[in-house]
Image 1 (cartoon, rainbow, N blue to C red):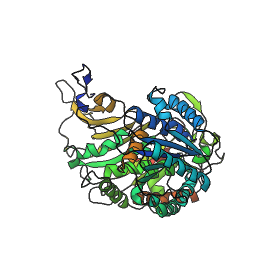
Image 2: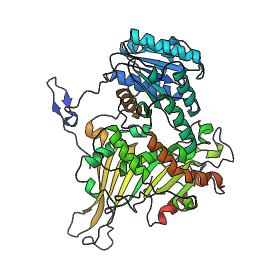
Image 3: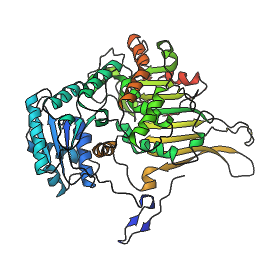
Image 4: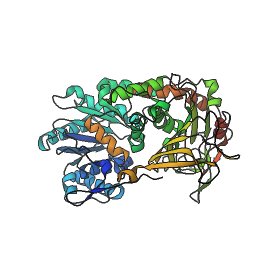
Length: 522
């Protein structure tokens, strides 16, 4: 059952979606400079610069803004502008650049070529920022975006402080820094990185970005729970049997074998993206929509995760690595045959874990988390499976009375579906499971903007709601460290143990079968 949209006419004759009537402007009011460190990288070209252009196209950026790219590659301002135009033309959701908007946008793009540990080039960055303040009216406000390899983060932060570009050196305006994942490669490295950040920035100035949290259905988890009286009363151990969170991909490592072979699915997905989804699903109602009130509740949930001891890892987790197979009917190589991957690699491309949350609401409700590459379908969702009915009254012999399920669909479809039981028309009381679907695109008549557009705009506004606070990052690392320690010190003899294009390893199925449950099909 699809949600239906009705429209009514405006004075100018255009149709209006009533679900969007009366919405406030999204315009950012503060003038600012945005500095992209790592401006020659794929992230800037594919995601960040198209996001900035679309924010300008949709009249979200303030009137006075400047953009500065900083990277090792040698190029002029003109070269950088042409390179960014090509990137936007290829990757922007709005299509090729448009005039006269592009010319105005390009005139606000500047480039600094230099090493990330060269103070002279950071002094040049300072000069350009001051020039933008004077000529573009950017008022001393600065957003630094670290789109660089994690090893560079401390160098950039140290150089900003060394040349007087840190927040403590400002006579006017504000300074914020956006840090891409991964924030550390384990608990110790994350703490060491945080120590470097703390030397220059206060926690309120640090925006740790997780693009999953910028996806529209993820943002709607709180609205679904706390803006509807029908859900929250049953959102607890009395009614919920289990929660399954899935982040499945059909792609392999896509040329990132060198990085991925030192990361793996547990670090790359479970520790950040998937655990963040768990926190949103399981958190208590915040006392207000203020960012820190929401993040306080997320921290409480992560603090309540029942520790998995090293001895329990075999019973609470499963891992896998894909071998050759078929994806969308086309043959693909196994992980060990991918470029820049060790042919004897024991890195997992699939990870699943079972967590319990030791608090009043969720005691003894298992949260099953899984993520993997080269699976049957690109598919991310959160499925809340409810307990069965206490006593069967209706249904003919042979009818299966399904348990109800609420599914928050993250990608590729964005929406919510509810699975419930209904009577089949006819004289007998036959019962069948049926699904009621809501789709964001159909319901609201718009295509959701990419996550980076929302998150960059929020960082510009100073809204940290969808960014991860350090205490939550630390708790997430603490939750996965016993698993990581065990996997790094225990040899695997069965890799590869699932075919590309399949549902994943049998050991993951066995994890749920042991509990009398089964995974939803990908």
